[in-house]
Image (cartoon, rainbow, N blue to C red):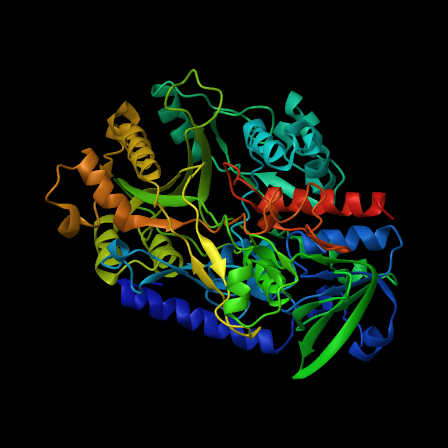
Length: 585
């Protein structure tokens, strides 16, 4: 990696690695690990009770649990088997912008265009067994009681409270961190679920814990518990290799006579009878159209973009919009509304020079040393004002990994990325993403056309509510106090400013400076929710309003975004949906 000296060489290096991995994919060297698919001809003739659309973060769980209850299930996935880069945590970066990533385009505002390579953001979503759990950054975060109380309010159903959904979090999980297992926090974790959860153990995190304590903050062993404010080592869904809902429910050893799986098959429409009952789906595979029938229910688990897209293509959505696209309206619902995501802003601190060189990458390890903070500006508050995701990178080549992350994840302009590289070269680094846990701004997902192949139009509308921006300024001013701590000064810390040309006219650290910085460096965190929200599109049992035999089970049903990433909450939704379906059998 010594040849990486700027943004262009970083892009070239990453592209070459992806090309090499793509060649390995064609050899199908991981195919033996995964559940084989059913002959499509057998599926057409079969009698299924349930059809699950999407073998992703929630869908794999729904289908797996239904099959375990001896229901006859067809699971349809648009993607294929997870390739080798999804197996090892150290290769996680290379799943983005690849063939297993939908790479949805999300509109940005004109003021972002000076800072981005393209005039849009990208929403990454997995087109592969396990869905986004197969390409995520593997951070396991649940959220707090207040998050789920908002769901209770929206759904008018107390079964979505923190106390009542905890069992569904635990059902999937197998916690293996000994410190947590030997503590009172053990009671908040699953011990025998199919998906392993571990905790960051590398000692570099201790330095940040000392900084937190100097600022009067609290270090917590486990933030996935009843604790709601503090800092903790990150928890991951990995043990030597990535843990996903594919590894948990769709391995070769999970093969069941009750569960049929079709891969590389794209559902194009939900079939409704004259009584608005879902009776099956139409799907395309190898350029042929097929019809599959369900005697009980169809469950959409296609994700926050594709679930509303399929509903609208099937005549379920905003009346005026569907009529504009020439689609017969079956049910008038606000499908695609309420789109929202966390907005993150990266802050880079250069630490002391390093005499060490990065060792050979261990692909089994998480690529950075991570800490999570749920931070209250007023320390007497019970719930966080902002969320911090901090990543330490060590060694004289420390700039290389974040450079690729910026190039791939946020698509900053080369001048911004080159500044970060130049300033951080041969230093240890701390990169922190500061996120607003409860944004008020809302966007939309609408159809581009009535053709299933066309990507929908996604308008993020980020920071359109002024208070979101004002709050983020507060968060950055609060977070950057770390540079005044004794430990940070001992480390020779320097706050890097990669956008000096754009924001240099403002005093660094002032509210005007941070406003300019946020408008340039903000990006969505790939935690999008809300497009088939409980209370407006589905009821508290996830049944689509005005339709029989049709449910949605994925992050699109979340009415108000939780304060953390949506990976663990979406798995919980899958478990709860499966439980409700089984209860209704």
